[in-house]
Length: 235
Image (cartoon, helix red, strand yellow):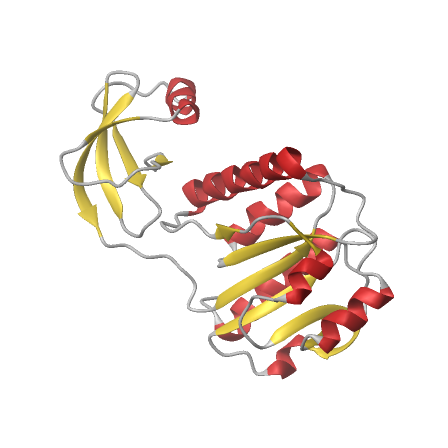
């Protein structure tokens, strides 16, 4: 399989582009040589054949209008979990076809970020999403939205209906009649606080269950995405 590389600039046939540092490192690890084949994409759809030029650049060839996006557009509203758990959630949600991720700071969440630290963490999650797209074949980068406080999000909640709040007390997720889009809210490690759950319900979120077992935060979000993909996506 040819290595896939995201290029953060508009691409066109015949263009020669410098590879990002991570891609240069990847090429060295794989011992790629000049003239070897790559696939480049710029996140706007489609992908380009390319060949390695020297050690740091690639020349683009033919564009292919290949799309691997899910027919189901899901926005994941995710209470921020700690470190590797949140990275794992972002990575696997992208692989499962999520359209957008809205990270939230919640009452029970152990992560507290603001200012430049919050901006840096969101940029880190965006890099995780890009890496996941390179791996899984997606040619469009899902939106990783700026980090918001829980109640700032609820003042103007974004995300298409139906809006589902993952909860053991809800009815089965298959009963919501999801068609082409949905919004899924998943709490952090300790879940949403009771008052946050009530606020989400007032904002139009309905409790949706993934079964009688208690799932970790990263498991719950991904199980919901997989279940919806099986019901209305491309599984």
